[in-house]
Image (cartoon, rainbow, N blue to C red; front, side, top):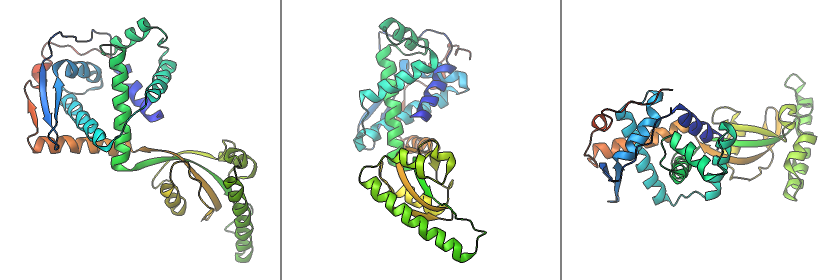
Length: 297
């Protein structure tokens, strides 16, 4: 969620002050046919408003068009996967946007002014955009697998030191295994993970945060820890896992896709549709933006 908040804020704050494009007559810029035979529509209005939002970051008309089409294909894939987003999730992200921008969403007038400033036709249009971005994030996670996992751990490693004689080191591991096993049983009976981490963990840095390690990407930690972490289900607590540092009890909190992997998945959807002739462009991106001056950063 934090990564998505940063992405959404970055996109919104690029926009300058210009009028949202509104039209009483819907002009179809392109149609896309999915492999299931469904037809998706890109309107001229939505393309131009996306261009107004994205052009200040250096995106060309063609790049904006590719993004709009790719996201529509991604949303269609999400529907096939049965992926949905709760209204409360949209509310949470809107609240975070308000907190970070000082926007006033408590009144319709304030919400409308913010939406129009960033080229959304209405508050409902902004909510739909956020819902779509949340949906794409979930679809990317489902399609590409977790790239990063938010985890916390409790380390039992008191007295473990590779410079100690082998027999003493083995004894330290044995003692810490007993402590870890006992702690695991307590957690299974309802003991509070954060409190236990603060009181018993041999990792002083994470212990101060209730064992919180933040988001961990593949390749960023030792192999036994990573293998166990990525094998856990959300909320699941592992049995003690041995590494050179001692015995870890790990809890997986939440997962998120690697945004680069999600982007590559969307690009692949676009490239496949283009190669198979499933994108019918009626108004070219260059024609669509003729006479439009993108706002300055």
